[in-house]
Amino acid sequence: MFMKKILLCSDLDRTLIPNGEQAESPQARELFALLAARREIRLAYVSGRHAQLVKEAIAEYALPEPDYVIGDVGTTLYRIDRDALRKQGSKQWLLDKKWQQAIGHDWHDCNRDDVVGLVAGIDGMNLRLQEEAKQNDYKVSYYTDLDLDITSVQDQVAALLHGHGIRSAVIWSRDDAAQCGLLDILPRRANKLQAIRFLMQEENIAETDTVFAGDSGNDLDALTSGLQAILVKNSAADVRKMALDGLAEKGRTDCLYIARGGLHGMNGNYAAGVLEGLVHFFPETADWLLTTR
Ligand SMILES: [Mg+2]
Image (cartoon, rainbow, N blue to C red; front, top):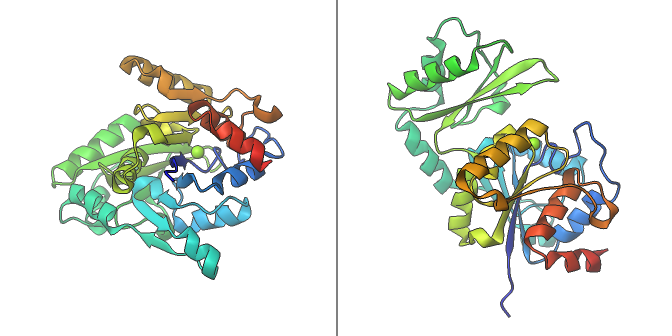
């Protein structure tokens, strides 16, 4: 019998992982795990974390094993064999080489060392390379000061690299806890949205069967892409506004669901918000939640 499949893509930190300031409803993650165990659900974690940190998050927060992991803000894509996991207890995370090739194209023959060498030649920015674990073949990451003129830095770095045939995306975000900025240089195609679209294409999954959930700035591309998208209730007000404005320009605000709380008495934060949005876009999943409770 034909079984409908839903590709549920979710950010981790402050979307599924309750590591923000707001409270999490007690049963939210458990309910999420029960839903993710349904055969109709294909689960993709989409995160800025690298593979090891995703694995640690799964263990620490008792998250369900996903089918796919898009890590390092879209520069890596792994397929996880959930059946092998069940049968042999071994986790098989297979790096998708085709995605690596696709994004590597943007950097031509240049590699990470070339990028580091070129950026080192720019004066006055005080960029500090992040730890080795936070870098990969197609991700070069720096710490920055918080008072940097970030637009100017992004423009300068992108223009310099472009001059050497490297098509890059230069992404900045702030780490309030550490009181510093984070600057990532990636192939231009390497972001959460493009990785999701690549995955949909490879797995032959339609837009109407796909949904993405997120909470913050590096989710905005995906949130405003026209894909069905969910913002958890604990998302920041400015992100909600930017997402709505971005979609209003395209006349597609119907693509975005902002969690408000109320599903099974939960508050709409984190996993509760993801479930609420899932039920909004796929009403049949409401019954699944009842039968899994
Ligand atoms: Mg997040």
